[in-house]
Length: 271
Ligand SMILES: Nc1ncnc2c1ncn2[C@@H]1O[C@H](COP(=O)(O)OP(=O)(O)OP(=O)(O)O)[C@@H](O)[C@H]1O
Ligand SMILES: [Mg+2]
Image (cartoon, helix red, strand yellow):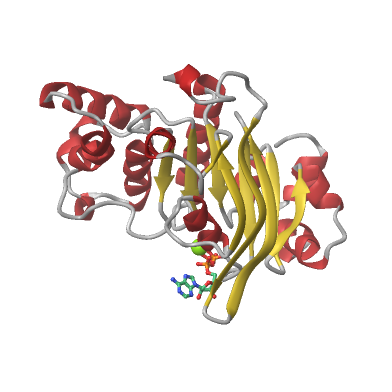
């Protein structure tokens, strides 16, 4: 299947391209002529004030919210013009971890991970069980987590289980909406490490919406900042630290960042 999707072979090519995207609800404009690229094999950290439209952008990219204008290309296919077959392939190569309601509460972890498999593949039950268990282990959950229900999981386990589900079909790209929010710093760091490892070993591309400065400094290759309905600034963490854009400056060099001593860490190359 790899060769079926144009541009899927090489690393470093543009995997997602958003151009002049405008999205609104009623008379309220949320995104106005926004453009953004994500390259294959990178972890992009996407930040912006609460309510700026980060989740709306994600949901629009995934086709859950209608855009007013602009183009969205995933794997070089314009989503608006995609045939059913192209759309299916794109959906299968795309994983998603939503900000809220990460798992189906009535299904066990194993069954949750199998949801995309049931939707897109026609596999015998035993094979699906084995595949789901592999994903559960891949994200660092114990095997006995498979039979647990979401209400029996800790926050960190829930995030890992949701990641296992996002990875169920071995996607090329995963969209993570605040995957470490609500986790203690150690669990959050472990989650980041896991995502970094997947980029390094599987060439996974990651689009991560996050408020977590630690994630941005430790695992993201590039950062994009949403503000004024557009991507205000994008670049490396070093670029963010140099930016004089007021919101970016207070976010990356404000009190919170200083408390975490992130600036010093970045300057000392200890990220
Ligand atoms: N379905 C919808 N209908 C109407 N307005 C919506 C809808 N979804 C989101 N909005 C509005 O769009 C704006 C952006 O919301 P969004 O959830 O994208 O913010 P966000 O950047 O993800 O914030 P947070 O960091 O708090 O998650 C908000 O003003 C929100 O009320
Ligand atoms: Mg959000």
